[in-house]
Image (cartoon, rainbow, N blue to C red):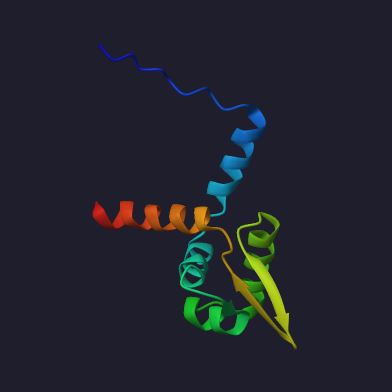
Length: 103
């Protein structure tokens, strides 16, 4: 007979960080930005065109995603290029998309 052991309940600190991570995906523009970034590095101008929002709006979203350490930035002259630098975030994002598409 197999014994099921439930996983430990998350502590408040960890739970807060997980909630913050999922909150990052609570805005359709951010989700669309992330969908562009999981395929590779992109600059603000290109992201604005892809998503159909202003460069100012993209920059605002990118600031939040950077603060949450979901994306990294590099500057090349006046251009700022962003990318998702964490395979866990890419996998989580892709699993969320797959879940919705499989419904």
